[in-house]
Image 1 (spheres, rainbow, N blue to C red):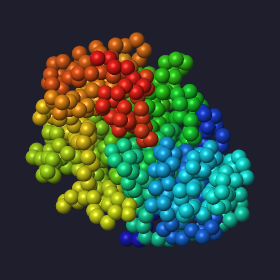
Image 2 (cartoon, one colour):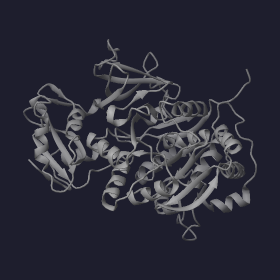
Image 3 (spheres, helix red, strand yellow):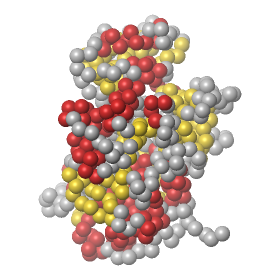
Image 4 (tube, rainbow, N blue to C red):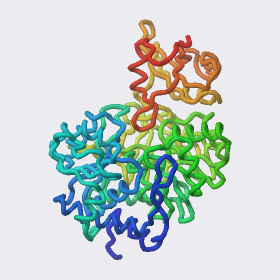
Amino acid sequence: MQPYGLTIDKFLDHAAKWFGDREIVEAEAGRVVARFTYAELRARGNRMSGALAALGLKFGDRVGTLAWNTRHHLEVYYAAMGAGLVCHTLNPRLTPTHLAAMINEAENRIVAVAADLLPLMREIAPLCPTIEQIVVLDAPPPEPHPLGSHPARIWTYEALLAEKGAPFVWGAFDENVPAGLCYTSGTTGSPKGVVYTHRSNYLHTLRALQADAVALTAADVLLLAVPMFHANGWGLPFAAPAAGTKLVLPGRVIDGPSLAALVRDEGVTVAVGVQTVWLGLVDHLDQAGGILPTLKRVLIGGSNCPDALLRRMEDRLDAEVQTSWGMTELSPIGAIAPPGIGAANDRGSGRPVMGIDLKLTDADGNALAPQRGVLGHLKVKGHSVIERYFREGVSALDGEGYFDTGDLATIDAAGSLTICGRAKDLIKSGGEWINPTEIETIVGGHPAVRHVAVIARADAKWGERPVLIVETDDGQDPEKLVGLLRGKVADFWIPGEVVEVDAMPLAASGKIDKQRLRADYAEGRIAGGRAAR
């Protein structure tokens, strides 16, 4: 057979040739600011590869991006990866100290920055001596020296493309070379770097496009409300051109009114994002009215979604909700509810798709027998699963080549995966284990509950006791939610304290920030909340 390297640039080459006039839409706060095509994206991205080479970047160098879901960010994706550089996405919701540590570890010489993030970059730059060039993506810098005394040269994207842009040969390298670098969110420890290869991203794209997964087609219109700095936007910036799907990039603002306008105006059929995004959309529709007649499917990831929100989404959006589970270390899709099943019939995290294998073990790493219908520590292996973290010399795999996700899970008879919490989040009370996720699932089924979390608090008698933390609709009595647990869990599982918060704290990934909750409430302090009992 012909040699055919599995490199990312081939997706855009395919889209430019066969879906060259298919639109990509860039918006800001629900208003379209640019329309362009896959053919234009390919031409401009290729010329930007030449510009990056003209700035002195060599094969394998890392290109940092600190940006939102925009046209220029997408062009940099392909410009870097197509040229054999590594696209290192940075999460602007992290602290300057965390971001500087990532930039320094990656030895980024160039960082492409959204104009509105230049104040953040000004804080980061003094901590990063490797930075030589800053490319401002969206607009001219607001001042002559936006980084103060830092010696990095400042370019605007369009000026760099006009002055240095040149054709470049894409994909002239082995498929196993690095293509992307993304750091874990740090919600369960210090952020660690995960390096994606061209091959792993290519195969992950094929996995996503399976009929029982994301299943994009050329007839779809995809709203990408998951940030492109979250595990390569769940791989969808590759899947959309591979399928010839019209792509809608919402920019920085992804509130309810903005997303509703884009779904209606652009005829969106598939929308992707974390549950907090869709909660905002449903809230807006409840208040402002209106329907979204073209929307067929909504894919959610992140934390386990309360049943009440799933039902509310399905009813209000009149669309199928596909739950999913993944990790940065998995590129990231691990399991997804197939189309046609939806959240109404499958409240778990979905089924593993081809290319991913799952194993449940005991606490010592021994495989459980049987694997179905039991709770175990979840391990995974596959063609786009991490082997080791960036800059770490030891493998992250067990003796059979499986990666320990740190999650507890069950697999039912039909092969559906349910994530039952993080192993480190288990609460040991009186020598017995309490699973916070089970409590969260029951309480989250109440229609008044918007967000729910359970954490441990030290107890002199029992060692640890659970604390229930809830964000509810106005007028609800959070203490009554405890009554939902009686008869469904052991009595000693029932929290002795309930704390109501006005707004549940979220981590940079959009998940509930349990580290913050522990800091605020684990010692009995009330910070921004009210003790209900």
